[in-house]
Length: 250
Length: 229
Image 1 (cartoon, rainbow over the protein chains, first blue to last red):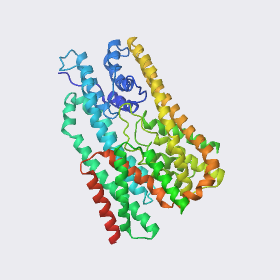
Image 2: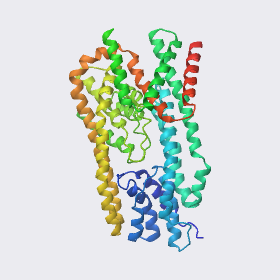
Image 3: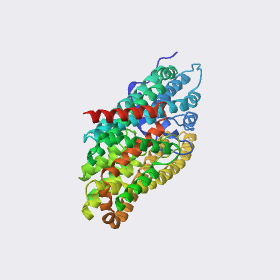
Image 4: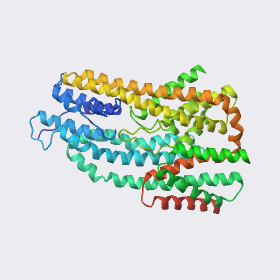
């Protein structure tokens, strides 16, 4: 088996380009151009400045995964290309690997980053913001971007060096379970956030904080309505109209 | 005023690109985008308040696959710019004025979904051209085509923000003096309702077993602690 021979600078170049993964997102092939865009520095290093048409063709095919997880695919794909060029026998070629992992990687990334970490960072920052902490937005960026950047950069380097074994590592990390724990934490913080707002409303009306409990069923009814497909926009319109109506009447 | 609008446009592009096309470091979240806009436009508190009002509203809408969630980035930037406009044109400021700006910006944000869809459709053509470039072995052209996609997203962001600010100004100029009194009378209720609705919708989309129990327990326990203090 040949040793990885692409220099760190080339890998970092690919990693830097991964920030543009969705730069030309389109409905037909989704992230295909973003994917080949981050592979190109490495491919040029392997094949020389003029790339064979078949190499370009196989990496401009349909591609869609979570944008941060694309790094994990790209590193391994580049290593498989390198081994294929060296004439090694591979368990699967680069294109097969890419097609095979993009959907599971997307599911992991969507659940962890969009579904869990983003709400968590937002709710923590909101808890600070409603206390008047002006650097709350920075907290959101920090909580979110430490794991995000670690995933992007670490994914590129690790998946290039570990090739197919990188998929096993992702499996061992049990990211879906981590996502569920983060979601539970977010829900607890959401409860605290709503209670703080309710208590503040009670203080404004000069009534006991326990009256804030009356808001719990209201929130749960909104939740139920949201689950039934009522959009945030409709809920905002309904609530605003009701409150303005009450203000006008009384 | 012109400088303020140019700044708003630049921010709309810069933060709008973060939304889909570049990095996605969440600088496009309302809680970051609106305070930054407010700070640069000289209305920092208005920006901060807009961010708090909008942050949770569409957080549960995941940008997965071909799904295009409402453009809360441009709604946040646009509402902050509207707050500045109302202050300069009508002398309205404070929380009621901010709430009015947000209420007008939210429906106008629908423009964002339309613009984003058009940008992605325009990128379809780039994908076709790239396939042809790949067949010709021209990797430099593929890179250029990819980067051209950024232009489409930037234009979409600018178009959305312009629509929100221009449409919002046209609506608020006659309506704001009529509504500001009623909005003020709702007190904190209207202000907090945005966050409560956002929290409720997010709770509905987080989809966790025991979610209602965890939320309810945290809610009740927090109120008890506050009540006992």
